[in-house]
Length: 149
Image 1 (tube, rainbow, N blue to C red):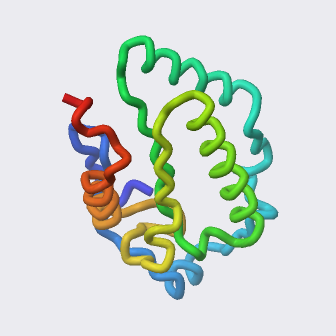
Image 2: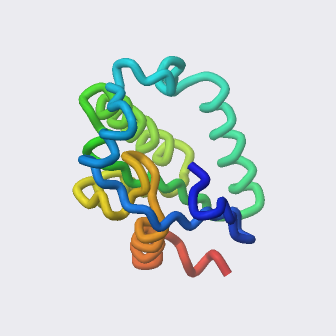
C-alpha cells in the first residue's frame, strides 16, 4: 500500500502513519482466512530457502558478522488458526536452526498482537510499530550490540 505519497526514505523505509482499525478495515477489504491465503500455498521450511539461510549464516560467520534474525510482530486479527499453525512451525524451525547454526533468533511476533495502532493493516507495521520494534531491539540483551561496531 503506497499511501501518503509513496515516499520511501533513503533507508528504504515507507513510514506509514495510518493505523489499523479492524472494524473499518474489514468494511473495505475482505477478511481472508489463512486456509485460503495463497501466500501459504507453497509454505515449506525446507528446500531452497533453508539452503539460502544456511548460506547466509556461513557467509556472516566467515566474516565474523553477528547475525540476528528478528521475527516481526503480527496482529491477532492476522493470526487465525491456520496462520498461527504456520507461524508456530516457523518459530520452532528458526529456534532449531539458530541453535544448530549459531545465530541469534529474536521472536517478536506476538509482542504487539493486541495493539492494532502499531500496524497499517493486519500484518504490516506502521511507523509507530516500527519505532516500538526498534526500541525493543535496542534494549534486547540477547543482541550482541558490542560486536556491531
